[in-house]
Each structure stands twice: as structure tokens, then as C-alpha cells.
Length: 56
Length: 246
Image (cartoon, rainbow over all chains, first blue to last red; front, side, top):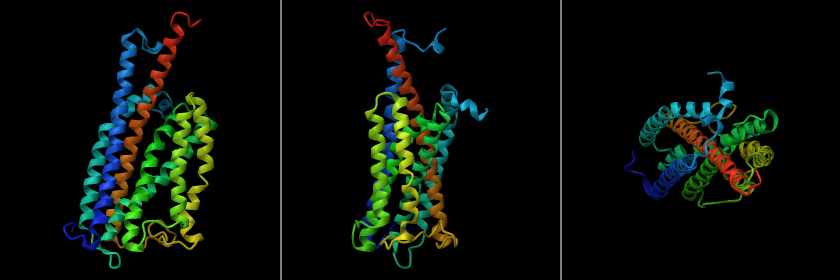
């Protein structure tokens, strides 16, 4: 089990930690980018600049 | 919904919004099951507990190559069929593919040090995967260099198709050359060489990685569509500004 990772435990833990870190960075990148694009769109639309298909 | 409807970015966004919660849930469940099975998997008779690195290293390698293969298909979509979402899909996939290739290299090094006695050797498998990582960075740089998305998409598509030559080189490098890296043990002609107690956790982790990739790719495509909307609105704003000549 996980409790006994043997003499190379540091390498195993470092490998799993690196995966967790990179996946977390990817999630944060996508989430922050989404928020930034939504904010830019909202700012443009609040100034009356909208897509033709979005006009009523 | 007919498949052709997905060519419409607005319909694609609506479909992505519906799929996203299900994909996130499935990804979390698959990771929980995969990590549980990986934790309970027995040690390898030669490598001991370091074989647990296999459960995160091998799926990263599969995704690294699979992502480039997907980008190659979308490159054809850009150059041949001129599908409006093809270069959106390619641009969104590149950073995710680069991250998986990076993880493949890092976890491989951390596995190699206790097993081979070194973090790195310039053998055929390791070098060809490193070349794949550099190609991902090249495609990302190209997207950032060319301002017009349509022109950038065509240039990136050509680079992607040229880079696809590296995929069979990576796959067969362990057969064509003498390498420190072990030969294929899961996807091979004679069937898998891994015992089921190690194979099943590996396959569940591979499913989790694939679902994670799918979720993130969909989210990144959504972001790219919004970015292009922002760009076209800003162009409209610039053209309608006084003194723009429009």
C-alpha cells in the first residue's frame, strides 16, 4: 500500500506531486482565461458593441 | 444534433456547456478510482514500489502522442475541409499536449533515476519525446507570433503535419534502436505483457487522463471562441471610431 513505498519513496512522491501541480496549473489557466474573456466581452457589450447576431 | 451543426461556434458553446458538468464528474470519479487502484496495486518483482510511477507516466505519454495525433487531424480540417472550429481545436489542444509531454518527461526522469541510475540519457525514445515537447512549444509560439488567427492556423497546421512524422519514431524507437527505455508492454502485437493487477489500475488512470484532457480541451476551445469574439468586437470598435475612415 501507499504507506510503504520502499527506499525510493521520494521519487514516487515527487512524481505524483509534479502531476498534481501541473494538472492544477492547467485547470487554473483555463478558469482564469475564461473569466478574462467573459469580462472583456461584458465590457465591450456594455459600451454597446455587440455582434450582429446578438442585436435585438 | 447533426454533426455538421457543431461547425457553428454558438451551437458548439451550447453543447460544451451541457457536456462540461458531466465530463468534470466523470473525470473526478475516474481519478478517484484510478488512484485507489494504483495505491492498492502490488509492487513489481524487479522495480518494487517505483512501478507506481507507471500509472502516471504511461498515460501522460499516451496523451502526449494522442494530442499531437488529434492536432494532425484538425490540421487536415484546417487545410483541406476549412472547418471553422478546426484551428480552434488545434490551438486549444497545444498547451494541454505540451503539459502532458512535460509530465511524461518529468515522471520518466523520476522513474529513471532509481531504476537506471540516471535522470536522463540521450537515447532514441527520450530524445524523440523531448523533440515532441519542443514541437509543442514551437506550435504555441507560432500561434502567438501571427496575429491573424486564420493565417496562424494555416501555418500551425503545416507545422503540425510535418511534426506528425515524429509519432511513429517515438512509438517504434525502442524497436529500431538500442535504448535504455523498455520496449512496449501494453500496446504491442503479441498482446499485453503486464499482469492484470498492474494493468487494470493503469487502464483506469489512462481513462482518467483522457477524460481530463477532453474536459480541458473543451474548456480551452470555449475560451478560444470567446477570445475570437472579443477580437472581432474590438476590430468593429476600431473601425467605427471617429477618424478611422470607416
